[in-house]
Structures are given as C-alpha cells and as structure tokens.
Amino acid sequence: MNVISVGMVSGAMGNLAHTPIELEELTCKYLGLGVANASNQVIQRDRYARVITALSLLASSIEKFAVEIRHLQRTEVYEAEEYFSPGQKGSSAMPHKRNPVLTENITGLARVIRSYAVPAMENVALWHERDISHSSVERFMLPDAFITTDFMLNRFNGVISKLLVYPENMMKNLNLTGGLVFSQRVLLELPLKGVSREDGYKIVQRNAMKVWEDLQQGKPALNSIGESLFLQNLLNDEDLRAKLSESEIRDCFDYGYYTKNIDKIFERVFGC
Image (cartoon, rainbow, N blue to C red):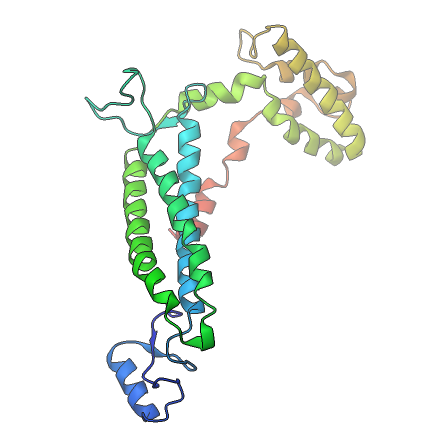
C-alpha cells in the first residue's frame, strides 16, 4: 500500500536540520519508497493504523464467506460443505460428524486480526510525536497480522477449490415454503396491470398466508405434478385472475428469471 511505503531521513525532530532534503529523496528513491512529506522522529502511525484496519476488513470479508459456508453445511440446510477427506475425523466423540473445521478456524482467526485494529489506533497518538510506546505493539502486531491474514487467504482458497455443492438440496429448500419465494415477483406484476401497490400487496399476502396455514397442517408444499401451494392459491384467486392470466401467473414462478444476469455480474466483478 502506498500509504505505508514511505521513508524518512529527516533527523531527530523531522525538520531536516542536519540532512539535505535531497539526500532523503535520493535514499527513498533508491529503496523504492515514497517520501513522507511531513514527519517527526518517526513516520506517523496513522499510516500503520490504516494498513491494519485494511487487513481487519480483509479478514472480516473472508470470515463473511466462511460463516456462510458453515451455515450451508448445517444438517437441516446441507446445500454445500467443506471437502471431507477419507479417514478425516469430524469429532472425537461422535464419529458421524463432518464438522466445517477449516471455516470455523478462519472465523476464529478473523477475530484475532480485528483485535489488532484498536492497538494500531492507540499507536497514533504518541507523546510529543516521538515516544516509542508504539514499538512494542508493532513487534507483535505487524508480523502476526500479515502472516495470519496470508494464512487465512490460503486456507480459504483451499476451501473454495474443493467445496462440495448440492444443487438438488438447494432446490428442495427453495420448495419448502410452497412457492412463497415468488411472492415479490407476483406483487411487482400487479402495478403494471393498473393495480395499486397496496391492493396488490393484499391480494398476494392473503394467498401467501393460506400457504403457511396449509404447511402447518401438514399439506405437501408441491402437488403430484410439481405445482406449489402458492401457485395453486393464486390461480384460484378471482381478483388476481381478473388482472393476470394463467400464463402470466405461471411465468412469475420461473427460477431462471432470478439468474438471468449472473454472467453479467461475473463479468462486472471479475472483468472476464
């Protein structure tokens, strides 16, 4: 980071009283560093704090993905899981377990990296801008923060490269609520037909609430031909049918509608 890749040869007070400014510039250029335009006896520690907080944010972002994988590996979800090698132990007490040990480890390490953000900021204010109370902190903080973050990145790369994904379980979970995941799509179609959003919301919500009641009573989320409870309710709603045809209602239950821009999103993010 350019914010930290700077040097100084400006003397004990930072005022270049005994050192030509050209010497400082030439020395830093030789070392491949920028020049700290203003300094004291040391480089200002707000530069270091910025680097550590950047590492903390990076660690938190890695943890964000790790926590999601841990959730997806839960037994009642089971849409993805860490690779589990032959002979690997998930639990010393329960042989059946396949614990997400790598992402749990990443989550814990992120807490360590974030813990350095506070001492890094505490280092900014030095007595008379020159005491060395920051030094002891940095001897621990800087190497450990960089090494641990690098370890997290490598570990997470390994998790993603071997991640096991189960699309069938994803579809099963989507169908658990009898098609209610499409309620917003139906709602957004009604204003296009001249129905106020308030009235459209009432129509969609009353049919959605019936689905919850049916599911609580043990009715299957899908019928024998794969139609959801929500779709059946909507097709039988006279107010809705007065505005949307059967084909228009069925079109609202297309999963492809929600993935149509995936390639564009990947291109925007990765530039490929």
